[in-house]
Amino acid sequence: MESTTDTTVGQLLSGWLTTWNGDYSPAEDIIAPDFTVHAALLDGGDGSAVRGPQGLVGWIAQTRAAFSELVFQVEVGPIVDGDHCAVRWIATGTYSGGFPGATATAGAAIRFTGTDVLRVEDGKFAEYWINSDIHVLLAQLGVPA
Image (cartoon, rainbow, N blue to C red; front, side):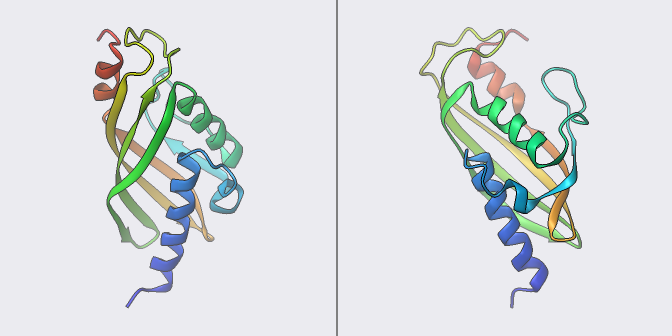
């Protein structure tokens, strides 16, 4: 039998996936105002500048700008432990151009994976840790190592 926590996490993750897939309408309902990202970003940042629902939407929009048809699908999970949940995902899409340092031509297919760990507080995601196979994406884009 599914617990209330599992149901809540399932609903939150559905909105999370919808948001990452380019429909930002769930963001205000699933992301806490003080939402914090813990990540090594491509610009060298640690994710601390990405705050709240609008910060997350801005980061996602920036990510999606270089890729058309970018689709995230859950491969494993959710795995729920108390107020934390984890999912393993696969992202596929088409390179649109404009990624700094990329030598791939627009139209190149991309595919990479990652794992999200999220902490729930008061029915919303409050913290986010991401580990993605960004080196795989960069290789597909022809970004020099």
